[in-house]
Image (tube, rainbow, N blue to C red; front, side, top):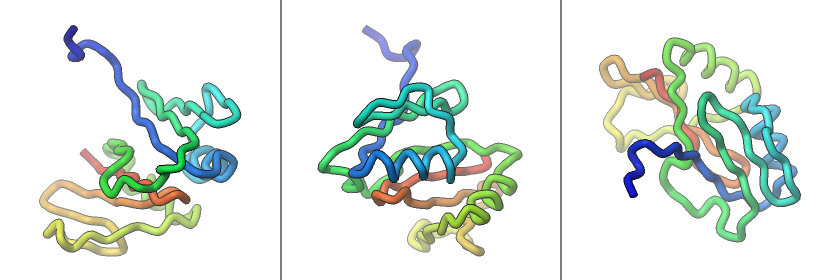
Length: 125
């Protein structure tokens, strides 16, 4: 059973579904396609992001969700800043960092956390 022609989606664990609903819909501007008591599904481009309640929320220390901002990267970063999002800085990646934006050649990226500490990433590629 090959997965190469099957769609996939991102899934993020949270402790407080109400707080997550506010962050993902109001701060990130995502629209819920399904909203249940302990799970919300957001449409994001041609894919979906599932946010669900778990006691293990925020325990992942790696990227949980990655978006390609493409040519809209700078505008997305400005909008996130305007909405109070704080960007993480990872000097160990060996990139130049200015105001939370990491650059290496043509690559630009930012990392930030949701209220439960899940690491979210946007890049320009």
